[in-house]
Image (tube, rainbow, N blue to C red; front, side, top):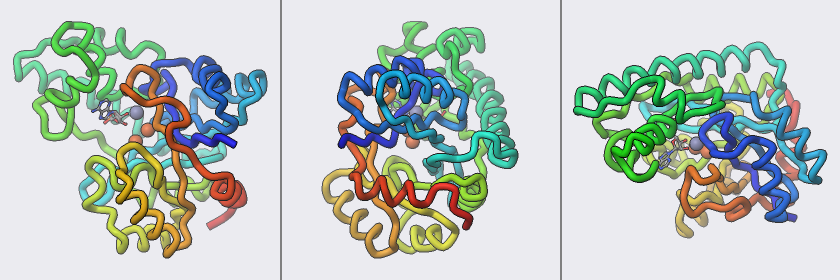
Length: 279
Ligand code: AMP
Ligand code: ZN
Ligand code: FE
Ligand code: FE
C-alpha cells in the first residue's frame, strides 16, 4: 500500500494539472494520494474525478499558510468540508494577501535592479489560484535572471534575500481550530523544515496538541534520519499521528518523485478515523 499524503498541482505551485498529477501517481503505483495545494481547494474536484477514473484514492487536502511565533508554518488539513464558510473565508484572505505581496516583491526586486512585471509573473503562473514566490522565481527564470527555481530562492526570493516579502497568514492555533470545525484533520507539515524548527520544539508541539493538532509529518525530505527518529518519538509521546509525504511539485522541486516519502497504512487509518470529528 503506497500512501503519499503531500503533493501539489498547478492550482498552486506544482507544475502539473490535478488530472496529470493523478495520472503520474497511478503510473508510479501510488494507491492513496493527497492533493494539498497551498491555500486553495480549487483543484480537489478535478483530482477526485481523475482518481475515480484511474483507480487512485485521492484525499482532499490543503496546505495552509500560518504564522507561529514569528515563523512561517505550514499546516496540512485532510478531508475538510469544501463548503465550510469559515474555512473558505480564511483561505480567501490568505490568497488575497499572496496576490498583494507579489507587487511588493516586484518593487523590492526593482530596487535591487531587477525589473520583472506582474504580467511576467501571471504568465509564468498560468492557471494558479494561489500566487507565490515560486511563480516569481519562474518569471525570473523566464527572464534569464537565474537558471532555476532553486537558484531564485537561494539568491533572490528565499528568506532574507532582497526580493523576499513575508505574506500575511493566520495564527497557527486559529488555523488548527478552523480546520477542525470544518471537519478536517490538521497535521503539521515538515515541522522541523526550513524556518520552523526553532519554534516547534516538543513543548510547542504539546501546546498545539492541546489546541487540536492531530498529527505531524515525520517522513519529509526536510528531515534527516535523526530528525525523523526524534519526531517519531515526540509523536508517540504526545499521541500524535506520524505521517509522511513527498511534497511533490512536478518539475518545480528537483529530485522529488511521488511516493519517495509515505504514510503507513496504520497511520492513515488513524487519520481517517478523525475525519469530521468535532474538537
Ligand atoms: P510562498 O508560499 O509564496 O512563500 O512560497 C513558498 C513555497 O515555495 C514553498 O511552499 C515551496 O513550495 C517553495 N519553495 C521554498 N523553497 C524553495 C526552494 N529552495 N526551491 C524551490 N521551491 C521552494
Ligand atoms: Zn509549494
Ligand atoms: Fe510546505
Ligand atoms: Fe508542500
